[in-house]
Image (cartoon, rainbow, N blue to C red; front, side, top):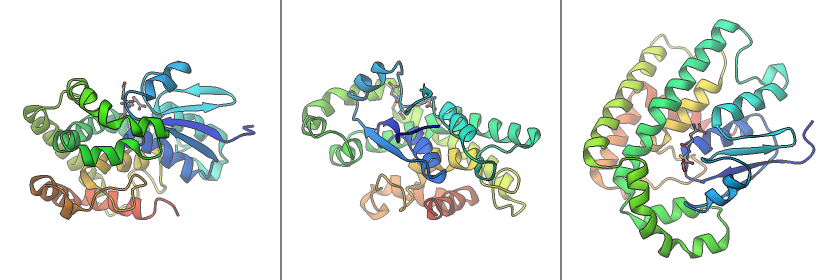
Length: 251
Ligand SMILES: N[C@@H](CCC(=O)N[C@@H](CS)C(=O)NCC(=O)O)C(=O)O
């Protein structure tokens, strides 16, 4: 049994980190978030054998992938709080959707979101530095111009890839629209699950839910081309679903 709060290493704005953060919040498990800005997170993750964020440090092991984190947390909570159904068939559906969102939606929303924001240093400063140590924040003006081309390259950010990402997001949203078409309350079965957390957290960059813990900028402050597409995503059943899950996120 964990004695001290968990440690969650994050890049605060990362939507995969938000997935882990949401699970910890939902399960009411005490944790301390250690947020870092690119590239400083690497110092923290390397130290414990991870590369990307989130990393969860527990007294029984270190988890370096958001899905591994959710699966671990699920094991230690009581039966009435599970994020993965006990029924094998339903569990398989949750895992399939989680994989689809992790592998297709997450990279696409990140690419599309960065395409519109990577040149906006004011926007990125707020999001990259939320909760980071003081010296990292102080170094933002030096680090940002150096990291901008690195991020562009690492995530392949250009107008062509952004257009492809937009298509991919639409196709995942279409699948979720179809799942929700029968009026169900959650993506799988009768209960909130890891599939719902993963969808909402990874879709957040294209929905900009007002209740997101990394405060999004109001739509009217975003460039028109970006804001109008976010509005259109919000109007889809899948987008409205993300907004609803975020409204209920802390309850
Ligand atoms: N499969 C990983 C993906 C996590 C991921 O892509 N994290 C990004 C932040 S959005 C990251 O840390 N990127 C920096 C890197 O890979 O060096 C997970 O689900 O945890």
